[in-house]
Image 1 (cartoon, rainbow, N blue to C red):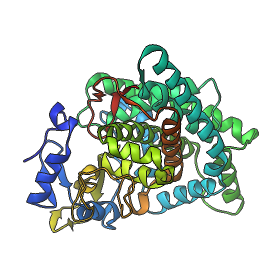
Image 2 (image 1 turned 45 degrees about the vertical axis):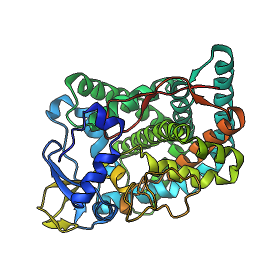
Image 3 (image 1 turned 120 degrees about the vertical axis):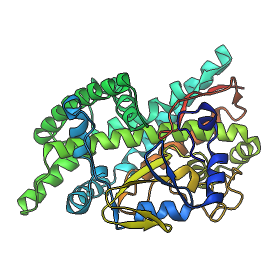
Length: 399
């Protein structure tokens, strides 16, 4: 029973379909996606952690039409395995470990509070306001821009670049989306090259400066240097992963809370539940629904044969609702204690920016709890017509 990833009814609520698939088996061939898909938590964990599986980048075709999109991904930490992956991941992890998340915490909390305060004013004056436009899309872009030390002249374009580039991750994007993705990639690469060149001469208190400095230090010690293209690919990954995931956790998560009113009231009454609430929102309606890897040699996933060179997908939304792992998975529980969700991935590609994403979501929830505790839906939300990156077009709130 393969699902149609473009079907609006499926996109509105894919979880009953995932449940039916799990009842039939942990892995299924999916002709429309062109690969087997894992639907149980155990099978998805195998896909994410399996040593016989890896990320093998294949250029978007025709390659001549996507030179910059392919450059970004060919040099991305996410699309590498082995020594190239380990070298880049060590560089990025070392830069993050210099305290950038802690450095940004006061600014993130202040920005979330200001954005939600402005949203609350709009609700009072006009009757409703869109959480996505006013908060969810604004906060992550500003945080990533601050993290990387990007100039003010670039920041207004970051959201558009990210949205256009990740549209290529959906199954069978149309020609317009493909063209926009390449244009956005080219503009973003040009901007990042300028930032990197500037940071080589004028380092600052930001992640990009730390990446450049760590690269120079590695060269002095005789290690393998990191190319400008690799730095560009790393910065682009931080934007796309950091922006898209946080936007959609905020949107999907607040919608879930409003549809499970008792859980929102529980969080309002007990702010100490913030940490478990963030994890539960990531689990309940994950922002990333599918993650692919490729068989490096003939292998199996949950007993299902995967020949060498075959892509296989972990359906993270299906894993998140597996009753073998989660008690009452269809129920939202902001106090859930046992919550080994896969929303940030697992294994060698576990998301390095997870602590920052958690900080951002918690800051928004705290601001909403204080400034709009009585919020309700002002209109039915519109969902984006995307499967891989699951999110909302708008989420209008009222009181």
